[in-house]
Image (cartoon, helix red, strand yellow):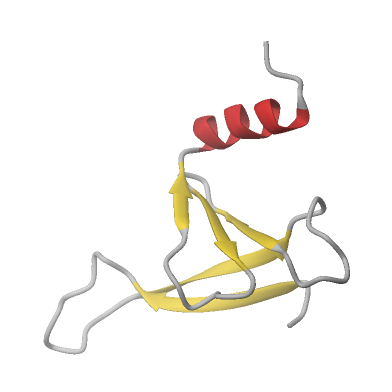
Length: 83
């Protein structure tokens, strides 16, 4: 997999039966905090309204969806910079 892989899916705003749909894509990026050799990776895809997180070992599985504010709080906490 490249450092950024587009994953297309049908928009939830598209109709369900007549074939009229809009597809959107997420560009996934490996976290710089993931290990380099063991395959234990967290991947992130950022959109204006949502930060998506997934396990690179199971990309087809469900992934987490966070608001940008929640993501910022998580990153602050994980990096030890939260107040």
